[in-house]
Image 1 (cartoon, rainbow, N blue to C red):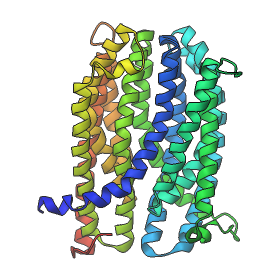
Image 2 (cartoon, helix red, strand yellow):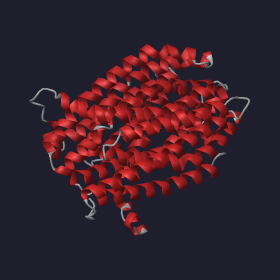
Image 3 (cartoon, helix red, strand yellow):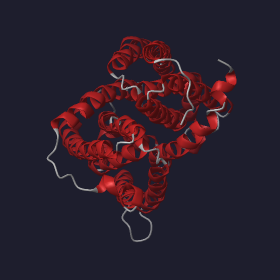
Image 4 (cartoon, rainbow, N blue to C red):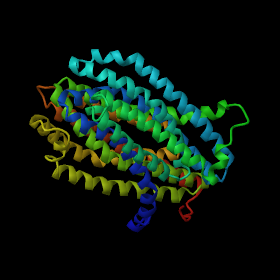
Length: 455
């Protein structure tokens, strides 16, 4: 294969991924805006947001993981030209997302007292609980939104979720400004004000995306109500794809969440620095997520058309593209490590700690981007069980022990915690690459190697 075999796909990959990237960045920007505004209140409120979001993130990993099952099934049905099958997957997926949003909200209410038993500063926990209650409720509209988003992504209609998400950010900023600081006649609610802003913006986002999609003439067939009762076989297929995907996200996201808890044992300032570095790293990660979803869509399309040689070329073009983009971000983190934390807080100790973490964050940009892109390609092949095992091994048998052992205050502290992240992400990227390489070669051997034009 020549390099041009892959680079000629860059334009198509990027045009499909850009709206997803911007939409995913929109979700992260909600947290970014919250962190910027709350950081002005001090280190303790910023640490409280970080702690409250530990439970929120666990719920999101599960819920969004289940919703990811919708995209490859819709994309495969679209590749086959079977709109009826696509409609069934979409409507059943929407029911699944709604139910999961309600269940996750109730579970969060039940488990939130656990924060008092995680060796965290008590004043931080007291601040986090009211914030957590409101943001937990916002998971219901967010999960319904995910159902519509994953459906649209499966049809390569990636721009509409982006529109809804970016406008929702404007709504979030407005409500944050008035409710956090008590501007005009609004009460000063501080952390609870940020949570209310998140809730309002997510409801707005859902309503807007529904209106956009339901009014498109080409999508009318998908919005016809089901005449048949719910089909257990369709739910079973969604769950067979969604549950392992949710576990993958839980294993990966869980180790990042664990860093928050480990940092909390080092003190409020270490936890605040950890939150700053995580928030910055999550924004660059969303670029890779966009290309990962693109891998799912394009690989699923080629799978539906049984064009496995083209499928492999497209996937490798995305892996190369992610590697190059994340390399640029890595350089940026290194060059701007002293400046970026100052956007959040003016505490000199927190800024120094965060700048140290950004050096390690720069190093794991490459492996983090690669592993999410390869996972997306494997999801497009509907291969989810072996990657789930790989994620568990990489993050919890390799990454977390390193974080725990070297992240003690008398060893390397926060730096050690993040070295565990680097170890886990690198192990995941290597093992997932081996899996995709083996599986894609096997399918070419089984179904033929005729190269067809990609789509």
